[in-house]
Length: 165
Image 1 (tube, rainbow, N blue to C red):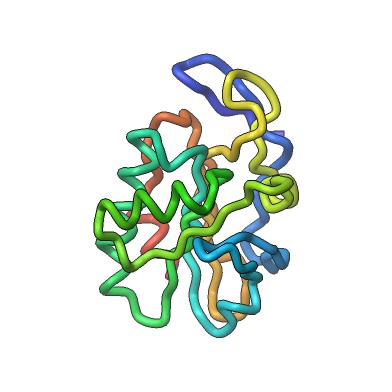
Image 2: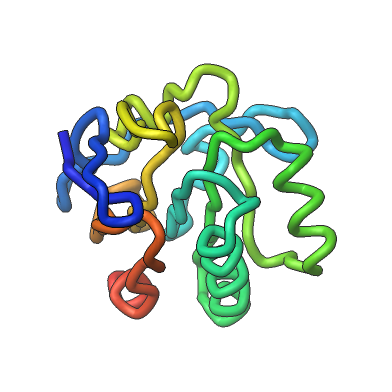
């Protein structure tokens, strides 16, 4: 269980992020067209998993915008933006913002991705949503970098995530 804060008040996650050097567990997440994507859909690609509570908050929206901006310059890399938002909300946001360089994936059905990766917030007003975190994996699905953002309102360390590619 990781201890993070929301507005300086302690809250907790369901576990710890995957360890650097481990294989990212397979997942099933819902795409904007309601089809299901798994890790195999991105085989052979480096991945930046930008995980956050909700696309409809300022910091979460900023992270999607910043990774979208950087993603256009990344070779053989896909940025996955993962939350428990409905796919419709993710699609609306990226459409309104003109964001085309990131892939939105939703864990809305059961939160299985969040639970499997220690991301589910278990107490406080955001209980049930995902914490703000970054997981970077190489072309073989091996974790090369993780960051559990300590204060949920803060942005992740974009430079560290991109340097891990």
